[in-house]
Length: 126
Figure (cartoon, rainbow, N blue to C red):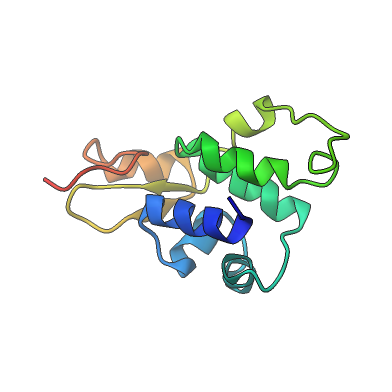
């Protein structure tokens, strides 16, 4: 799978617009737009952010796509240290609700304030 398709699939998995997705992975909207339409190759920092977001949302297949595109890994010179991606930074984090739109929280306090009906994983509609 190519990087633009992997980004589109991750964004679809999360159910986010490009603006929401850019905020969730801490990348600029322009960066996300260029990466998703394939007009610009991703830099290593963007690939790491995307891999962490994919891992943090259970899409290890997409995380592998992003990691394998990292310089050095791509050429077979380096082996990825998966622990760096399996434990992504905690925040910002996407939170999901059965009936409300997805929201982004930036701290444990904000996450707790949402209440127990919110989840870190996408929920099926009720």
